[in-house]
Length: 341
Image (cartoon, rainbow, N blue to C red; front, side, top):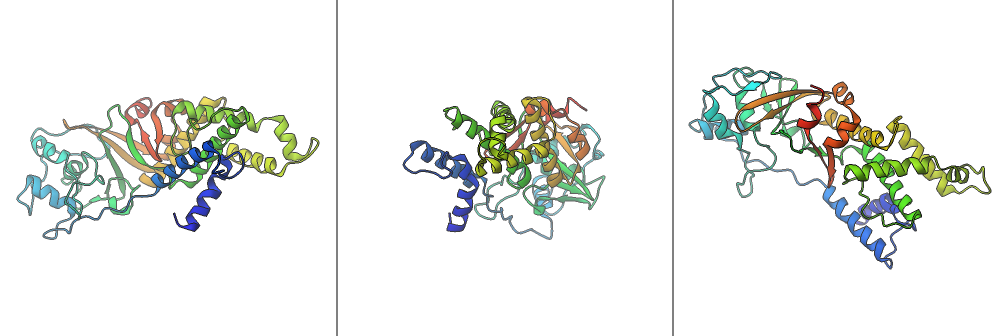
């Protein structure tokens, strides 16, 4: 890390240490610091994958399709008709070509290996939509790592092999507001554990946590926020006023205002995850797009993801279907969305 980055990093994580800074003579501080450094470096974005040069004037995806089911220069259009938002299955006349394309990915410029910038089914879906939307289907990766997979006119489309498993839905590092909220909530856990003399290294963090760790964090956050003794120290209603406590309580109140009201820790934890999912739907889908669950066998099921739709999901369902691991948002869409549609 450069000095500027190091200073910024230490400022952001200082509250996690009992002394307000990492004591390198304290084994627990050293252990926590190593953990935080690993999380911080994992959150950094990987370099952009550089695609190979396009061939014969074709787009990169067109070239892959032409090389796979065509003559390298052209390729046949699908026989069936496939419309965005319309559930169904791949026409039997298209199934052989579809299966050949399903696992195809772009190549990197270095080494010629398939990249991870394109998920299973994306290029197959690109091909299927060519007949109904000629000239409108675009590879949307150039819009950024958090962008939806495809864009058809002004409509965004995320292609996933959803089923009943967790799938990646982008990194949370770009969502500064919700990341800050999570830092405050998990900072409360660290403080609460420290006050109780417990080890807080296994309590999770803003960049990685289980649902139980998040529920515990929200519960501790509420306990600290409602603590009358701390309130007295923050306002000076008691014997003295402690500036550090005043600042801490102000952060807790600001975070609670952002979360809104909730009945218990479980609902509060679910609301945080729904808020994160909603913000990612805005940055990835523009607030209104489609997700299609596309299987290797050719079945397709669409979900219309709008901001209102996501906000209307049950927080408790979100708690059981949304995970954050090493800064990556992962969602079991099959489980989460099937409860409403």
